[in-house]
Length: 434
Ligand SMILES: Cc1cc2nc3c(=O)[nH]c(=O)nc-3n(C[C@H](O)[C@H](O)[C@H](O)COP(=O)(O)OP(=O)(O)OC[C@H]3O[C@@H](n4cnc5c(N)ncnc54)[C@H](O)[C@@H]3O)c2cc1C
Image 1: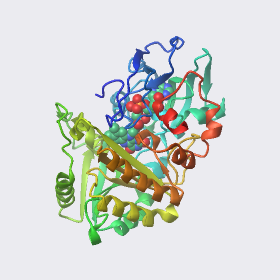
Image 2: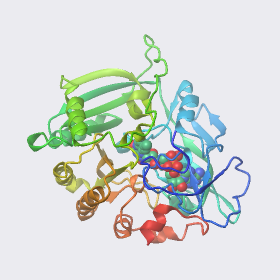
Image 3: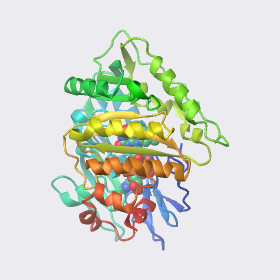
Image 4: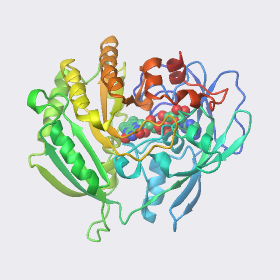
């Protein structure tokens, strides 16, 4: 589990007091400092931090209020984790409509970042499946918001980075499943053109698509990788769900990052070549399919005491192939690379939040060890390509984009600002508004 008051990238440092919220019927605590809701700290940068202020920790705001097993509508408190929801709903034949690559996120955090998953081309963002939410403001007022009730507050709060008030509870429309199993196919591809071909043909027929790319490969192998496409499987009477996976754990923070150019190249080559056949088909449990990293607790420690930065961008469809090639070349020539490079095409379904990140195009997500100015320079260079294409960078993963870039990526920031609660603030917001 992440330490309360830290983000997943363990960068930057922030000092803040923490107040636990456990009763959704109470008002917000009176404090002299600014406040910010905190879910489970699975954001990588500083959007869940409030240096010098207070975090409202919602881990005890985790009650299930109602599950309608006939319609699949779940009403729960905002601190409930996706992991807890899955334990409740999967045996009842329901699944989350959209899920990010970790199940250790809270409902409030998922709404405030309007998270996306591997089914974006079919289902859009998480916010599209929120039927209503309750927003508690620091003046004690409460608004139950939906697409038809206070729609402008709804649009500001979905993807609203926790700044419009505390979400106390939400109703979510779940998705039916016949079993906890997934039918999966993993295709090896040799270059980025291979990715785009597979993505075009697969997004039509498969619910979940995503690729891992080897960003340490150069020349003709640039952008080679493994493309996964999957669907929920029908019930498999001959197979029982596997026993819960044994969890590994990184027990301490090593004195230096274990991720360096040598380990990166070796990991990427081994990972790419672990699949010898061009296509591998399997039936797997949903856990390793959706949450491969959750099997290693505290994996973020491998980057050592300085932590790491994640960079996730989206570039528009018309510029996608050209931009991704350019980004991969810049990363390759900086000698950095990432051992977790994920590439996917977002679909055209509009995101409901004013500041939602997902929009049509290709999205690339990478992790970089924090090597100070060297890493910052590299990420600024990537920003130049993304901004020139008309794309955007994901605030939930960010610890360093400039205010100028933020305003370029999210032109609705000005209309959004009028919905910010006067007592709410975050390290991220102060940084990009300065
Ligand atoms: C391994 C890994 C994989 C990931 N994969 C994806 C992915 O595929 N897609 C994706 O979109 N994201 C992904 N993420 C990012 C993650 O889904 C988001 O950062 C998510 O918002 C984290 O939720 P949290 O509960 O930890 O919230 P926190 O990180 O604690 O907070 C996130 C934001 O939500 C606000 N917030 C939290 N609770 C409330 C509340 N009750 N009311 C109002 N505001 C609130 C906070 O103020 C903050 O601004 C991934 C993260 C990890 C670590």
